[in-house]
Length: 95
Image (cartoon, rainbow, N blue to C red; front, side, top):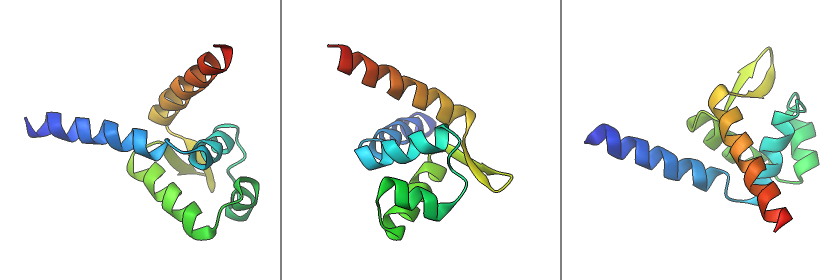
C-alpha cells in the first residue's frame, strides 16, 4: 500500500514540476541538447538563478534529467515524459 501511495505522489509531483511554461521551456532546451551551461539556460529562459536551481532540483528529484559529461540530458524517464508533453501540446495546437 505504501509503495502505491509513493508512486501516486511521484506522478503528482511530476505534473507539478512541468506545469508552468518556464519549466517546459527549460526542459525543452535540455531535450534539444542546449543544456551545457547554467548561465546560457538562465539567459534563454529568462529566469533568476534561484528559479533555475529550484526547477533543476525538482527535475532531478523526479528523475527527469541527469548530468553526463558536464551537460544536462533528459533521463530515459524524462524522454518519455517529454515525448508525452510534446504530443499533448501538438494536439492542443491542432484543435
